[in-house]
Image (cartoon, rainbow, N blue to C red; front, side, top):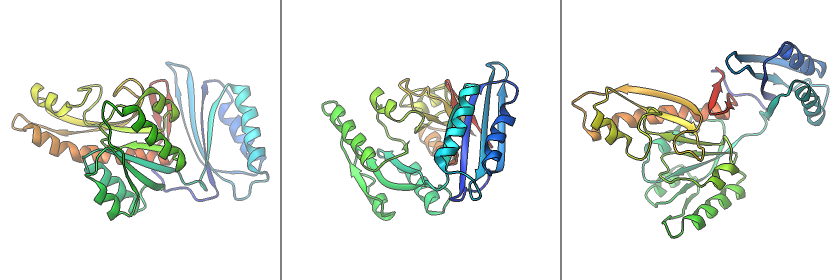
Length: 289
C-alpha cells in the first residue's frame, strides 16, 4: 500500500448503486476543475449491485476552491445516488487510544507512530487503570486515568467522551480496552472506533477467547480488528490474521502467540483507516489496496 499523501492530496471515497457512467462522471468532475488524478481503485459487488471507489488526487493546480469542488462532487453524487466522503491530506487525523492493563497493542501503536508508519496525531491516552501511565510518560503523551465501576459507568463514559470532544478526536482505537461501550458512545463515532478482538471472529466472541480456544483444541488462533457497533464483537471486520497452535499449547502459550497477531492486525487496520482505504457497507468493509 502506497505512502502517505502530501498536504495537497485528497482522497474521495464513494459508494452507490452500480450503473454505467460512474467512473467517467467522477473523472470528468475532477478534470473539469484542473485536478490531477493520482490513483483510482474500484470494486463492483454484483450480488448487492453496489459500486465502490477510492480516488486519490492532487489539488496543487486545481482551478477552484474546496467549496466549489465539494459542490460539484455533491451534484454528481445526487445524480447517481452516491454516498461520498472527501478527506484532505492537509488534515492530520487525531487519534485517541483507549487501553486497560494489557500493554502490547498500545506499545506497538506508539512505536509505529514514532516511526512514521501511522500518519496521525495522538494527543492523549485514556485508561480505566493506572498501570500503563509509564508508557504515556515514556512517549510524552498525556495519560488520563478514569476508573470505572458498575456504580459510575455512565459518568466515566461521559468523562471519556468529554475528553474526546475536547481534543477533537477523529478516530478512537480500543487497544485491548476491556469495557463495553454504550450505544450513545458508539453512535457518536460511527465507523470511527476500531477494536481489536483476540480471536478470529466470528469464533469465540466475548472476553475469554483464548480459554475457549484451548478448550476446543483449535489448531489456529487469530485476531480481528473491526469497527465497534452496539452488537458486541460483531462490527464490520477490517483485518484478520492467524497463527498455528497445537495440542501442547496452554492458555498462556496461546495468549503469548496471540499477542503478536493482535499487534499486527490492529496496526494494519489503524493504518488503513488513517489512509482512507476503508469503506463500510452494511456490516462489511471494502479495503482498497
